[in-house]
Length: 374
Ligand SMILES: Nc1ncnc2c1ncn2[C@@H]1O[C@H](COP(=O)(O)OP(=O)(O)OP(=O)(O)O)[C@@H](O)[C@H]1O
Ligand SMILES: [Mg+2]
Image (cartoon, rainbow, N blue to C red; front, side, top):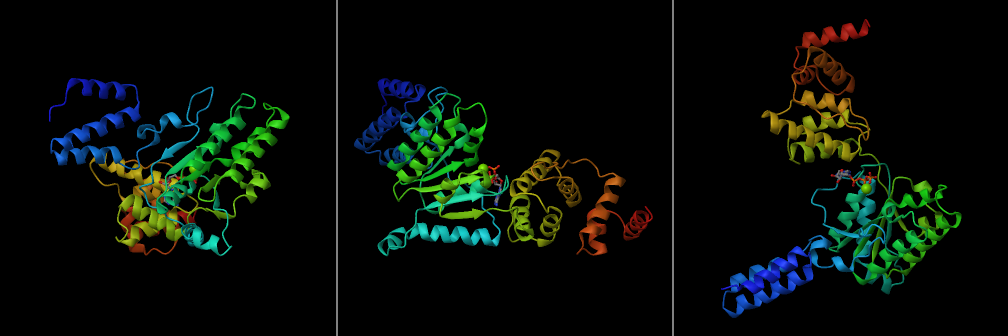
């Protein structure tokens, strides 16, 4: 088909002005012309481009409608894509989330029988345990668009602007069958500091309560906080479902290593088990960071990192502060530390320790003896 230069210029102009509503309109016209000229494949290709799901809000044509902060002009709420990485949870949290999803999926039945509940879910727990990820998974499992607003970014230093921002988010949402994710809920409590006028905290809390109460039943609200004790009790009560995400237990840590490092859920359990044991106290985000760093080093240096390298870096990592592995040769001090560490971890045979640390069994005996002698 001949595309005349007016359409092309118009299309470019719309794209350069980030006017995606116009881009879409021109796209539809193009598809129509393709179809009229019997190029059905061409028409279909354009239509499916226009219809593509999961595009972020800014590029999907809704951008003009987004509520924005008056001073910064930043959007107060954003549409995020559904997560593409798996969620790995301790048994208790996994069961709780399944129950929530079951209730959300059967809301009509529950309402008919008078046993429905407001679909408010509060997630709390230490950083990096998957709260934000879980919120995205809720949206994906229920096949709903996922809108996120961070309470800390709604807080403005200009008096009255914070409440206005919060209202802007809640006014925007009821128009869509959505999951609204309110992240960093505890940010509200930080208004208690002296920069703010005394009545403002109360006003802001009230605005959040009114917003939550104003939502229709088909909007699902997921809130998240690292500091549940800072939440106002009235806000706390607005979330009938509460799930605490704790640091992963040993089984979940092993699954994380399998998934993030070995990318093989069925593979050899040994190395993942070993790493899981050493990674006690680390979060899912820490383990993912370590695993990805190890894969990066392997890729760039052109050789796989040994299990010993990774074990050492895990042992040196603290929650929220992983020490990323490197590809340098292990020194004899490293090997000694590694052998003693694995020996202390328990559950490993001498032969396994010798293999991972790269020393003989006699050497392990010697390390032990030296360690015992101080
Ligand atoms: N339970 C988990 N299962 C799978 N991946 C996880 C898990 N926890 C953390 N991760 C990984 O770490 C990343 C960061 O986690 P996420 O942002 O969801 O944590 P969070 O609890 O929201 O942390 P914060 O309190 O700092 O906001 C996730 O995107 C995911 O890749
Ligand atoms: Mg988070």
